[in-house]
Length: 131
Image (cartoon, rainbow, N blue to C red):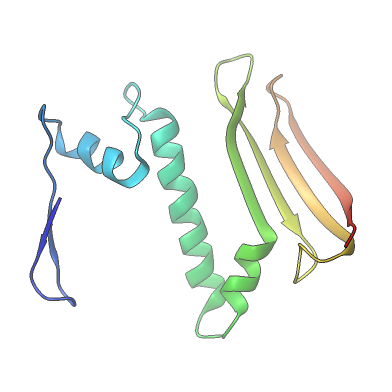
């Protein structure tokens, strides 16, 4: 990668040896993984999760101090911990009701997942943390 120009309008140039198509090179640069097949596989999912979290932070946070940070501290996304029967990666999203989800004591949360059996599950749970 080569970055030139001023700080407000940088120009970024990417290249590789052996040469990769620009789209594949960008995915490799952003995720550290080469795309798999035509859909990009896990690398594309990494980019989607990153962009979704950034979008939520900007959309819900606005100019409010602490708004977006609080939301992102409550939201956890895990993709690809296992593989489903159909070959897709498992996905789990957890949203904590507490503004400080890592606090000691009871912390209620919502969870949604696609499990290894290709089932979609929703639930409510509680985490208890000791000092």
